[in-house]
Amino acid sequence: MPVLSVKIGRMTLKNPVMPASGTFGYGEEYSKLIDLNKLGAIVTKCVRLKPTLGNPPPRLAETPCGLIASVGLQSIGVEAFIKEKMPFLRRFNTRIIANIGGETVEEYVEIAERLNGVKGLDGLEVNVSCPNIKRGGIAFGVDPETVYKVVSQVRKAAKNLTLIVKLTPNVTNIVEIAEACEQAGAEALTLINSPLGMAVDIEKRKPKLSTVLGGLCGPAIKPIGLRCVWQVAQRVRIPIIGVGGIFTATDALEYIIAGATAVQVGTANFVKPRVMLEIIEGIEKYLEEHEINNINKLIGSLQV
Ligand SMILES: Cc1cc2nc3c(=O)[nH]c(=O)nc-3n(C[C@H](O)[C@H](O)[C@H](O)COP(=O)(O)O)c2cc1C
Image 1 (cartoon, rainbow, N blue to C red):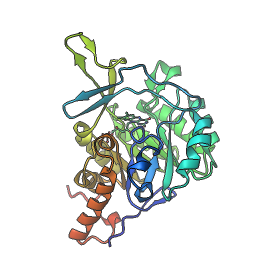
Image 2 (cartoon, rainbow, N blue to C red; image 1 turned 180 degrees about the vertical axis):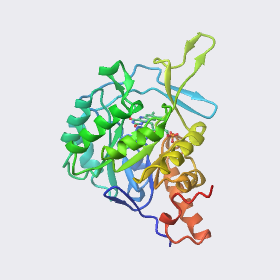
Image 3 (spheres, helix red, strand yellow; image 1 turned 90 degrees about the vertical axis):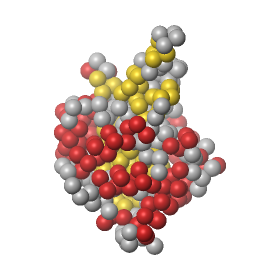
């Protein structure tokens, strides 16, 4: 049997497949449909400092090859996450990663301090696509200096946790943002969050989302995700988690060959709850068929 285990920072994952934040809740509903122990990790819905409702409806719109979402920073808040969700999550033999978001650097730091040392939690995934209210709502992750500030301060606040930063593709040069994260102490990067899109209802002549713009997810964004992973993999030493449009083992393998150490599955979970297990089986089958005894030999093996 080929070795599927990979390392993300200080975490050893039994295999490289995990859900993307916001598409798997806290695992409770999916635990009735699939065995969560089989996943490489579980990434939670965004955790914020206080409970927040997110954006008003409508906040999902279907497009021919994806979904546009503007859920916003909806969260149950960090205290409820620790008390109500962690006791359930820590029962599983997998790594638990909390996706965190904030509107100020201080909010990120407070969440990180509160989560540091929580029993059963292994890592933080810092979502820097959130709007920075002190800078007029521009996302933290579009400016290398701001991203450096958030990441270095979260690093100090959560020394016990593997620190992953999830980047937005809505930038001119994703490589310089990735390098700033690495310099600030990130142990891994997740690429990509959703590119901005919009959809129009021609009868009402209104946008289909209350926020007008939303994040495009699903098959349409795989080429963008692959491009970002490949570009960043050339320039940083820390591992990359690839995400965007992964529906099959072939999609996941494309990301791994382009330079991703692990992958996240988002929208596909809505279509087929078993999809991550099928992807794990498909990766294993590919390795066997190609006589590769360890997945780590495949990572970044793209021949250009
Ligand atoms: C309904 C929904 C909610 C999401 N919520 C979050 C979130 O809370 N934090 C985050 O970092 N990304 C969030 N995302 C983005 C996904 O984690 C992922 O980056 C994106 O959907 C691209 O992957 P996919 O094409 O496999 O869906 C959300 C996506 C969707 C569709």
